[in-house]
Image (cartoon, helix red, strand yellow):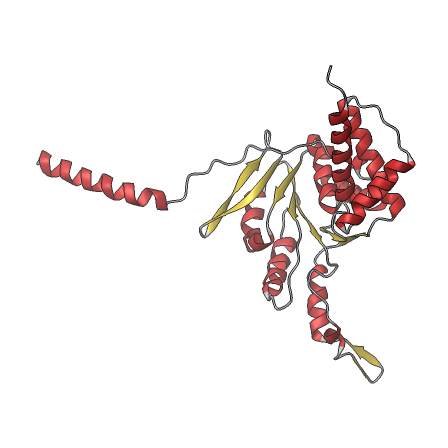
Length: 297
C-alpha cells in the first residue's frame, strides 16, 4: 500500500512541477502607505498592480512657461484630494512640452496628501474596470495615468475604448480620476475626407458621423489642457532653469550669456524640436561638459 501511495505522490509531484510554471504567481496587494505609484501589468487574461519605485525630484516649480496649464490641473487635483467634484483630464499638444512631467510633478506635490499614481498603457485600458474595482474603498486618492493615448488611422480600438471609458469613468468611485496625455486633441487622426459629408438640411448643419465619432472619445474628459510649441524665448528660459538646477547641485559657477544662448539654439535646431525635453537634455550636456573641463585637484 505504501509503495502505491508513494508512486502516486511522486506522479502528483511530477504533474505539479509541469503545471506550476503555467499558473499565475500569487501577488500581494500593494501597500499604498509605502508605495506612491504602481503600474498595471497584464498577465494572461488578468493582471495585477506592480509597485514602482518613483523619483519625486520633478516639482511643479520646474515646469516653466506652462503656468496656466499647471494651475488648472493643480486646482482640479486639489479638488479631487479634498473630496470635491473634479474632472478627468486630457493633456494634449506638442511632444516634449511637459504634459507627462506635469502629471508626475503632481505626485511629488501631493503624495503627502494621499495622492497615488497608477500607470496604465493604452493597450491595457480594456482592463480599466478591474483596476477601478481594485481601488474602490481605499482611503488614498488615485490618478490613473495613460501616457500617449492616441490611435492611428484604420484602428477601431478607439470605439472599444470609448465604451470602456463610458462605463468605467461614469461608475468610477470618488477616489479615482483618469489623466491622459496625447499629441492629438481628439486622440485619432482627422482627415479632410471626414468633412466631405457636412451639409445643410433646412438650415440645420449635419456633421458627418465620422467627425462626431472621433470627437466623442475625447469628450469623455471634462478638462482639456493644450500645450503648444515653445518660442525661442520660452526654450531659453527652460534651459536657464535646468542649468541652474544641475549646476547648483554640482557646485558649478556659471552665468547666462549670448554664447550659451546660441549654443542652446543650435542644439535645438540640430534635433528639429524646441521643447522642454530638449532644453533639459542640453542642460545636462552643457553642465556635464563644464564639469569635465574643470581641472582635477
